[in-house]
Image (cartoon, rainbow, N blue to C red):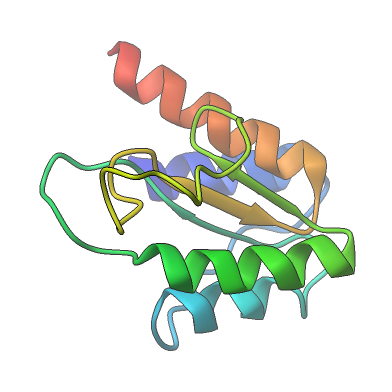
Length: 116
């Protein structure tokens, strides 16, 4: 499961394990990442429309950029914040993290899950 894999990633990076915190909407949860040394907020892509408005992710991407933190889509690309076809991010997924190695591991985790 994803939860078990997150524990493996945390242990590999030298932490005691992972903790799941959900305290609000997308913007609030992403901003909580900036309070921790090695934290992440991610959403895998989904087929269903809706969920995760571009304006929420654009605002947090600006904060992350100013803080020197990482924002990517689930493939590791810059977030497509100007997509003329949708005002949602469900098609590409998102990764927000304070740690580049953690971002890479989450992106690789999704790639492995998708391949299976």
